[in-house]
Image 1 (cartoon, rainbow, N blue to C red):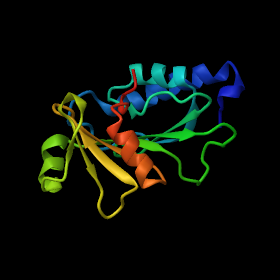
Image 2 (image 1 turned 135 degrees about the vertical axis):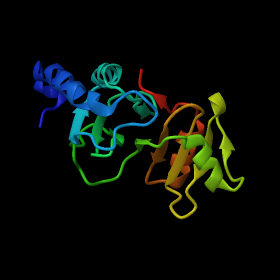
Image 3 (image 1 turned 180 degrees about the vertical axis):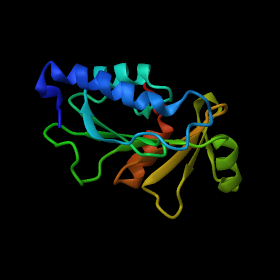
Image 4 (image 1 turned 90 degrees about the vertical axis):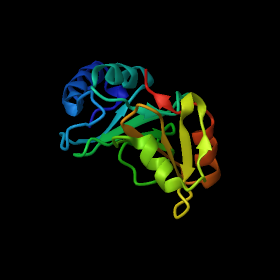
Length: 172
């Protein structure tokens, strides 16, 4: 597995990863199956480069000094960005702050339907809903975005703080 310390190979790996991820499609109705990507560690600039080349939004909570961004994609097009502190290896099983982007047409309307008035307003007309059965996760949705975003942290208070901060947005 390549790491940012592998020098010149990482940008090549990021370009190859972008080519793999670009099969996602740009519409609010993503393809039902895409090529999965095993966890790969990316720097902030590599994540930005990748996000600019793929056909779907990749949400994150903004940069964190010294952290490595572990990106994973499943066959259904879900993308996970996990914040790995300095010294933590890609693929570790220990849970860390993770921002997930799930293909979910009409996410805002569908999340409102299950919130029963418990949603919290976010900037840009979005909403957040704490998962009552699993408070370590907060689900977010925005108008005209065919994706649902999940903020997970081992600490329920931290997941809520990050979700409500206004920092969760597409990588750009």
